[in-house]
Length: 156
Ligand code: HEM
Image 1 (spheres, rainbow, N blue to C red):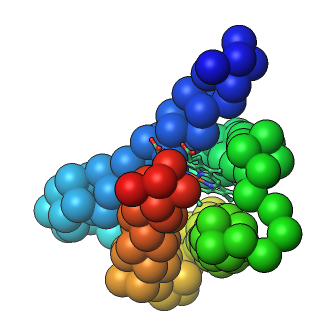
Image 2 (cartoon, helix red, strand yellow; image 1 turned 180 degrees about the vertical axis):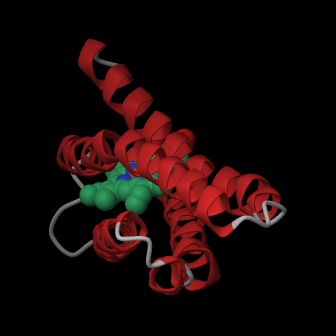
């Protein structure tokens, strides 16, 4: 394997671990625990901090995933209309949907933060609610699907 390629695959897999694993940890370990904070103001402050840190952490890995994925698709010759080029397009589509979903979550969090800062906790809660309920589970599911298609591309 060429010297550069090992780093490309390394960062592709690391990106998958951090993005998908980060969302799983927040949704299934951190989120249930935060529900035990009964004081609205304190709970919302912690939720805003944790989601802010998660979203900032994963952003560079989102960009790394598409850059390394496109590079590998090019180097491995998954072009034209082969079976594997279809799988590459499926992964590109999954990445796009996940990234749009991520941008929606960032926007919802930003709106919630503005309401929080003006002490409108009801509206802050309203904007945050879809994140653990629909958007994080959707991205976790799509991320696991992309991981599976990564193995299909490897030739399994
Ligand atoms: C959306 C998030 C993505 C995740 C979570 C993900 C995950 C993975 C993982 C875990 C592997 C390693 C499989 C192995 O060990 O062989 C992999 C391989 C690969 N992925 Fe992705 N991937 C993503 C997006 C993309 C995109 C957007 C592309 C193409 C534009 C892409 C193209 C590839 C290619 C070409 C391989 C190499 C397979 C091989 O070893 O030959 N991936 N992916």
